Structure formats: structure tokens, C-alpha cells
Length: 294
Image 1 (cartoon, one colour):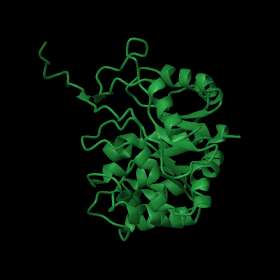
Image 2 (cartoon, one colour):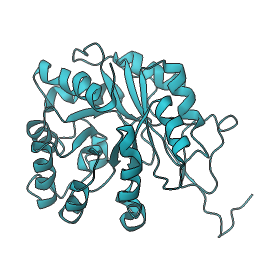
Image 3 (tube, rainbow, N blue to C red):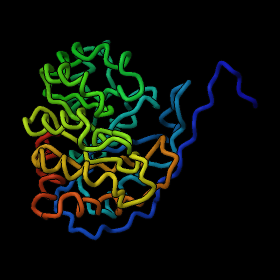
Image 4 (cartoon, helix red, strand yellow):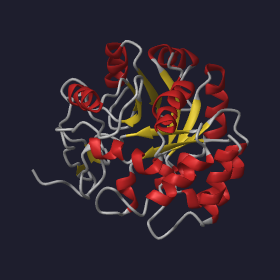
């Protein structure tokens, strides 16, 4: 059936590589993937209409197999607006028996009881997405920060680090921790000398934020090891060795380029953090602190 002009067709997502290989680096016990998304099946967990994209037909079991192949024991599920409710993530948290945490969507209308329910399930933060629409996305920022502060939650931001020139003063006034995902998600043309990226480094040094070393494929480098990303990642690790964490970004939705093997993505830490003790902080100690893993 042909689509109508008033109903946009969701963009289909590529399949991830479901044959994750064992990484070459040694993965310490208690390692955590701090950024992944879970979807469907839609007959059990319906998708929202309309929506921006359609996820690939992958399952929670596919994700667990990827974690097992990489030797990763813990995970943080970043819930998306694709689903009508939180059930797919709540069910995954329950099945993981304490090994998973989750990040919610911004909703100023959520009741205290709903927040308590998510907190007990294992949610530990709220993700804003100003990368696509900063004015609309950040409108309830301070209100939501005040609402989640009693739970010890943090606020996570998918943004372009160049925008920190304008946004940083607002973020630094928040009464909760701030997490920046996807290495600050700057385009390839920008580099570590950009004023916004220098602000991000300062925030790390002053322990005013955390940063996820995730999604290096989104910086316009075609394939691993993403040489244009390496100076960025190393600068972040140097600035905040106790404030950076690693994330796979599985299953890599809304990405049209070459889909890397997740074992390759984890092995990038050998370039970004050559010392094994430092990698343990990134993979184990830092996420344990940020997400409350015992």
C-alpha cells in the first residue's frame, strides 16, 4: 500500500553483525557496555506510530550473545521513543537480575510513583537528544533535573560538542551529574582544538561531566580503527580517566555506513587507552560508580 504524504515512512535500519568476535584485548571481570538499545519484537512490544525509523529485527537474546562473545557482564540500556512504553526495557532489566541498568526518556509529566517504579526496576538517568532539536528537547531540562535528583539519577545528552560553547553554562548549573555520549559527536571537520571540545575537556578535568566512548563510526570515518577519532578519544581519556566509560551503541540504528563488528569496537580501547589498568577503570570501575553496580 502506498504511503500518504501525511504519514512519513519510517527509515529502515541496517542489521548489526550478529557474529561478534572475541576481542584481542583482555576484558576484565565486571566489564560494562554503557550504551545499547533494545527493541521488539513488535508483536509483543509495539512500536510507536509515527516514528523516525524501524529498528532491525534483533532481540534481547541477540544482544546477550554479543555481550557473551565480548566477555562483558554488565550493560546499560538506553530506552528509545520507538516503543510506546518502557516494558521491553523493564523486562530486560528483570531478566538480567541486577546486571543491567537503564536510561529513561525525558517526560516532565511523569508522576513520582512512575519515577519510583523505574528507579526500582534499575533506571538511573534520563537522556536528552539536543543533537536533532535542541530548543524543543531542552525546554524541560531544569524541571526534570529537579525531579530526578532525589533518586540520584543523572542526565545524559546526545549533542554536538561544538554546541557546548552555548550550552555548557546551563549544563554546569544542573543539580545532577551530566553524561555526554558518543564522544561529543562532532563532525570529522572539527578537531580537539575546537572551543566546544576544549570546554568538554575542561568539564572532564573538573569532574563536571562524564563522557561515553561510544559510536566512533558516526564521525564520518568509513571503517575501524577510525583514525580521525583517535585524537579525540585519547584527549577525553587523558582529561578524565575516572570519568569516561565505554559503550557499543548496539545495534547501531540510524547509521547508513559500514557496520563494524562489536569486537572491533571494543578493541579500539587498545588505541585509546593502551594501559590495561586504565582500561579496567573505563570498563569496570567508572561504570560501577556512575550506574551503581555493586
